[in-house]
Amino acid sequence: MFQYAAGLALAHHHQTALKLDLSWFDSSDRKEHEHYGLNHFNIPEVFADREECLAFMPKSLTRLQRWRFILGKKLRLKPLTAGLESSGTYYFERRWGFNPLFWDLPSNTYLDGYFQNPTYFEGFENELRSRFSFQQPLSAGALVWSNKIQSAFPSVFLHIRRTDYLQAQEFGPLTFDYYYRSLKELKDRLGAFTVFVFSDDVEAIQRELKLDLPHYFVKPDGKASSHEELHLMSLCNHAIISNSTFAWWGAWLNSSKEKIVVAPKPWHADIDPQFRDLKPVPSSWLSIDRNGVSNF
Image (cartoon, rainbow, N blue to C red):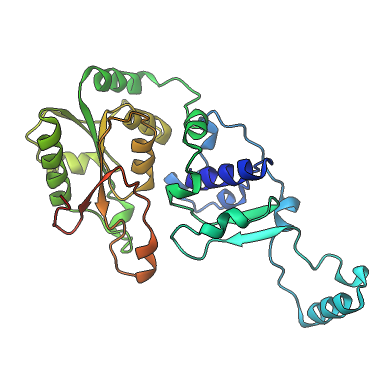
């Protein structure tokens, strides 16, 4: 969703079309949360074919091809350079932070990266929320939860990402202490509220997380699809999110100006210096130190 948002903003900047390259999803070893899912939103999907995408890719040339290319350039002989140049600009995101030169990219550009910074789509929020509205109605099981959430006021969703983060050291799972401190902060601001807990391992979280507020562990009938869980999170009035872009979008999709969103700081476990530039949390959200020191 971050990638689509950045691409849409750049396409609007140049008043040109946005095309999607789905070739990354062709691999059979993709995890469940790594499947293509933009088709669940009201997005006009236009797909780039393989030939269009390959035309942007930097060419790996043999020694003979490099000499042919250099000679063709010097002599201005197009037949010698035919098929050896990229068509358009291939932009690879080398750093996690926002790059202000992003807007200098030409219209014929292939974007490769995560673009996990809301600065990339500042000014396009209304357009994005329209496109990120959900196409399909909720299933029967999810609809029950939707009714519970909307009848509880105020409601807070609390998201815990567990399974893959136990091995992903650069992210690192958040401690329950982070969530308890976040809940205390919301208690001070809101008073009473109802908590809806979402997780990729909700059975384990239900055994371990102890809450002294009205709460539910969200378990729709059967296995809820990811887009339905995203939809349900977006219905909550406020949010306590994990360091997961899935939870990030669940909070962002709620357009209320009154919402309070609590997020961890730093986003990553701060093991590798390269991740220190990754700051996806908007300034209007509240940041709580994931290591135990409150920011307030």
